Length: 389
Image (cartoon, rainbow, N blue to C red; front, side, top):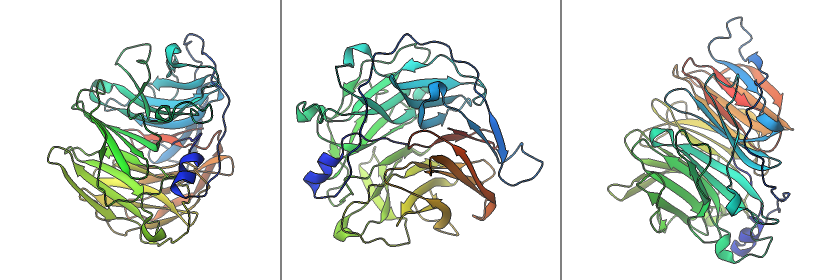
């Protein structure tokens, strides 16, 4: 999940209350070096002897880094984005996190400036396993021009050993960044700046069209975030929190970009009326029936399974044992057998709870110490879950 450095300024402009983040200036990274094999900690969440299916392995992030997000591609390769003392880094693993390849700095040398801090925000894996990364900076703190407070983007070609130069693709004070990419070369960058916006690319992120407001009627919480994913049929799904009349409900937007059709569905059942943005994170991902969504309401974490039209599937909204703090990460990972692992950041740990295909909890809550505020994990093809700590 995401980290944030500067959004209190935008929240003040938008009339929200918030808390400033902090960071240390990024230092130029040395040339990428191969990493040592990861140490694994395997835990079964159902307490049984069979840990081959629906078990959880926690894997330490290289360089004692802070996990941001992990993705598994169609071949099963794991792509991991993490923040380190030297700035955002990327690694991949072809053996479910047992070992990693060489770490690659995400930010090129030419984009680094004295005192400028880059942090990883989101990552998507698209056509040909090209890696797309969203970044934020502390440009506001350095009093750089407001157009520098925007959505920073870079990508890594398959087989490349260095990311492309970082680009500011919207040149506007903004936050809540998310990326979605499909296998046809489409990439969408979603972001918040008073409203819900996007920049779309149809050439693997080489160029992005001008920003579009997805729907002027939508009024998102500016200090929260967005989460986006492409469905197999080409629809883009965007998860966001509404703020109209201070009713902070969760909505799923479905955008048929080819036909310029947009619809949305409220997916949260527990209501939350609060005068001020709660500054929360949440996530959307695909499963075999449609989508999995996870979000907090009143500090409690919920998740739901949705069909391809964004409708809640039985049993509807499911309350988890998880508690969310301000801008703390969470994910919902789906296995092929219909089970779901919900993982969240709490008490300096990554915690998790497994649910079966009917939405019933299986076993007790698991926990492992973890750095940062993010949560990153994947489900492999066997139904095994891997979380990074």
